[in-house]
Figure 1 (cartoon, protein in one colour):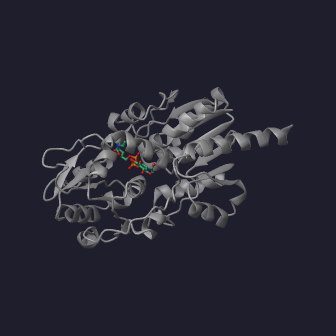
Figure 2 (cartoon, helix red, strand yellow):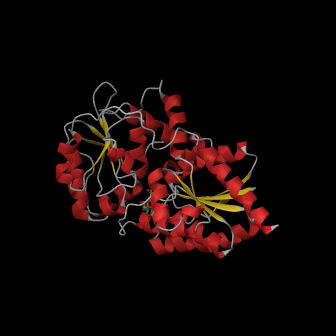
Figure 3 (cartoon, helix red, strand yellow):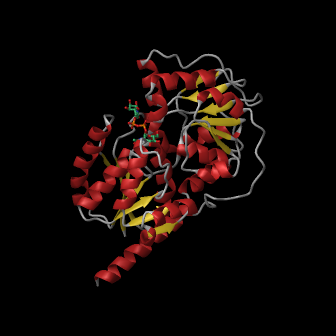
Length: 361
Ligand code: UD1
């Protein structure tokens, strides 16, 4: 079986790591296509290095642009790639523009498409990620779902017959990395240290960064928190703050570049809490049992909220009260699986591929 993975943005590199290992264990051929959506070394190369991912076979070097231009450039470049490699599966990950471009390219060329992390919904049609995931699920021949909630969403949309619950591959990576870094000291910038309480914050979603008034209110709220906040600034956040002349540093805030994955996990492990709008980080905080506060009106990872480890804060003026809430009750719930999701995803690909061969014979 030959699988062609399409990745391009930071969270996809994290998901690719356990899938690449699982495909290798299964003896499958694996072609990796990097769209170039994220191109800074700190947003891309370090993930391949730290997570032991094989170098991409193809790099489309698409770079930034409006949604249409960025997605269109990837789509235009994919025909030749698929023509050359002719995989048994195109595998796309998550909800970025690279996901939907890979999906469209595959269906146009009649190549079977699988979507990893299928079935997530925010039900917020203003988010580019929501369009990307809905379109990709409906284009896919195989929807690989991370949770029971995701399976329910797929069933509600008439996609149950092509959906398989495999668990969450981000759990696979997180558990491995957590154990590998547990004995290390966290690498914290001056002014922060492991002995004194601090929070880790990230902010990059268009709905938070692209409205100057909202971005200013969020940054002010973070700066006003009682404990120091390590703000790991995504390039989008830096670009938008610079455009509006907003200084990100000040008050409780220490601003730093995004961290490599193992360093991020280590920094979160020693923190007293996370404040974020990232999807992945909400889950990582939960898996590390660090309380999370999410600056959004909704979340795809509802289990983190239902279990009391994540609180949604749509209005930044209520952030201080939310982060000061009492500690959540301990739980041993494992809604995101136990670390074998990538092997289960590959098994589902093998099985569906074998079934297809039987049907064609
Ligand atoms: C993208 C995904 C989002 C994911 C996030 C993770 C879409 C629509 N969004 O958002 O789902 O959670 O990645 O990080 O696909 N930039 C750089 N260097 C880089 C990458 C980006 O400077 O390496 C800057 C560019 O100015 C670019 C901006 O960041 O315009 C935004 O990048 P883009 O890829 O459009 O979306 P993200 O906000 O990163």
